[in-house]
Image (cartoon, rainbow, N blue to C red; front, side):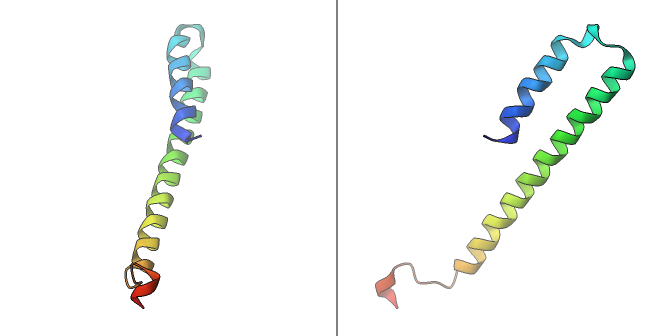
Length: 68
């Protein structure tokens, strides 16, 4: 399950119950949400870096075992 699949329903729930929270509670929720979004961004960057590294390592490899 991706982080986005978890974060988006949480954001929707926070939006729907916005009027029921006091300002201090909303600030806490906002900080938690921002932390989740930041974590999602970092995971995305790490995945892209891993894919890029694998592509870089495999660039000199033959495309089939018989090519060597």
